Length: 281
Ligand code: NAP
Image (cartoon, rainbow, N blue to C red; front, side, top):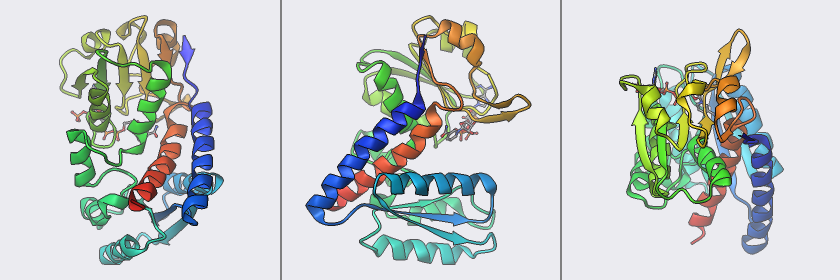
């Protein structure tokens, strides 16, 4: 079984991006800039944002974090986003989710210029992705896609089963694999026989949020399994895939932690650089 090392893949991607930023600096005499807006003092969000800032600095991006208290008014955040939209030194804007209840997530997402939407959540980017046009792609599915391609560069005609249909993970994952000519089945909580669907798959991407849902006998011997899940349990952080069982059967599997997670942040940096490059044309 191939253990897909997300930490190593992310370090390699960051190294590629560092070289790219050096080249862009030489060509344009400026570097891509990422601005993250962090609202409130939720510890996981603070950790994510700190890691994003550290990784951005590591590859040579200009990075900035704007912090607001939980009580910040929605209009203050929207005004700040509009200001950042106009700022030429800002290539990418990310508003860390979740947001406090009084702030409308969709309004925030739609206020970010699609060309600076490094999360790929703006409806215009969602539409472009599903139409097969150039767009920002949500970072986690993009990371999953890059890991799958490392194991199997040619995905033509492969059967992919996506477990979970969230806008964040399942749906964009489906679009990425369709573009690669996979035959994609997207499953969800109302799917009748998830095990039978998974047993058909050459590729399984599990993004559900249920600890160890995907079992060993759901997986064929030549299946690539990507585990997006991050679940806190009594035995620590586990994924949506039963690692011990599935690792005995699958062709390749991502661990949790150390699989998809590290790629998510590296893909955010990649998206920021892509936004910068598109803005220079
Ligand atoms: P989400 O928005 O809660 O969506 C979960 C999806 O799973 C829904 O489509 C739901 O179906 C489906 N589902 C629920 N129970 C199911 C079942 N028994 N069988 C099949 N499908 C079922 O979750 P998400 O935001 O995509 O996150 C999923 C997991 O990924 C979480 O553990 C999260 O922490 C993790 N995550 C990891 C990263 C990373 O960087 N590694 C990033 C983001 C999220 P319905 O649509 O029918 O309700």
